Length: 251
Ligand code: SF4
Ligand code: FES
Image 1: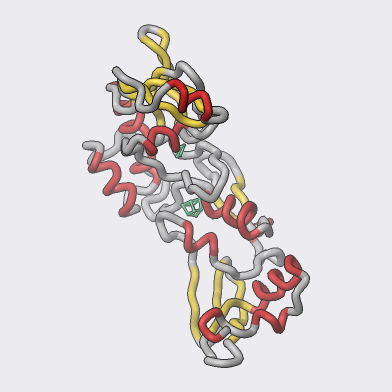
Image 2: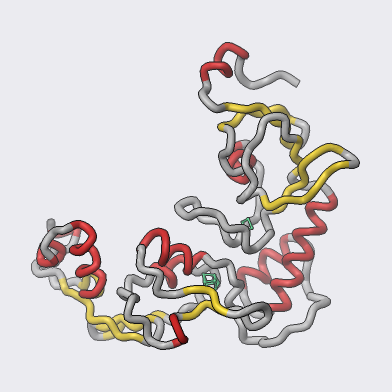
């Protein structure tokens, strides 16, 4: 098979390496997440805990691929595995599909009524689980996206993962109202199963059991964000909090 670019061009691509994906030779930046490299080839890989704006932590194990050559192959999480020169990757081999079906069976047992899981499982031919369901109402798949968004994007770490499986859960410190929370709602927006309770009524946003007063725009009156969030922005930027009291449309 031919490389897609000439050797000359390849040499000018700083940090580029060559690897094989599903029998095709490809070039990609060294150390970039293998998942990103695979997707750049237009190959579909299911994921539940990956987000392009967040560091990967490999929670769901749905993105698994097989690396190496028979008989020395192994299954790895592609989101946390680096792109390396000479790597031989199979994205849809039988061991890979089996591993994904197993993950989906486990998730189906944990969250039997989570629509997203039901749909993904069905796409992989999984309609029921051999594993025991502890709480049929559970909807949290423990992907950790909410925790990472709060920590790495918002920068407040108001929630974290507590306990061990099967009692593991996302919660605020001591499961009480978190003083660190600014009510931004990022956790609820990013949650793939919509399990984080979040409401807005009469100028009050409620999330993680805490009420946050929303700041109306001084010009149009539409709500912008919780006052606590604007104070957080003011602290980070060093700008006066009043400078955030006009919404984007009215600026
Ligand atoms: S609450 Fe939502 S985002 Fe957070 S770990 Fe559970 S499923 Fe993932
Ligand atoms: S996307 Fe890789 S482990 Fe979840």
